[in-house]
Image 1 (cartoon, rainbow, N blue to C red):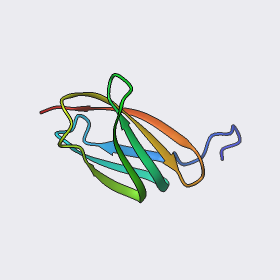
Image 2: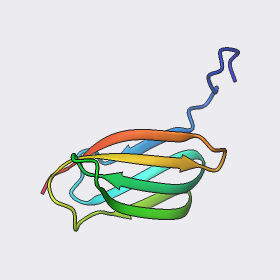
Image 3: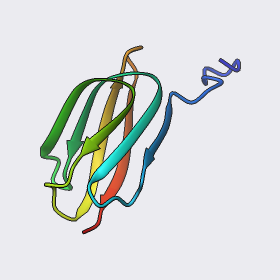
Image 4: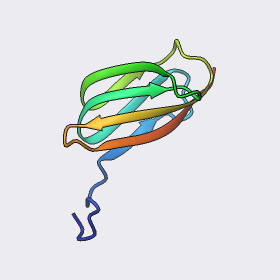
Length: 87
């Protein structure tokens, strides 16, 4: 913590590549409890549990478009990020 309530090291490090063809690499400073993927309509289209701090999600079955990723970390924090699938 740098004194402003902001962690000195970001808990969410990366999601790559973005855009992706269907494989998404996720890296966080904390263990990942759950990742949920939502389409543009807000419908859940993928879910993965207990992934460690680095993980790869295979999303090749999803259509082209913009998706929202909700990551729940071991410390209870939730991170929301968008990414794009291109095919």
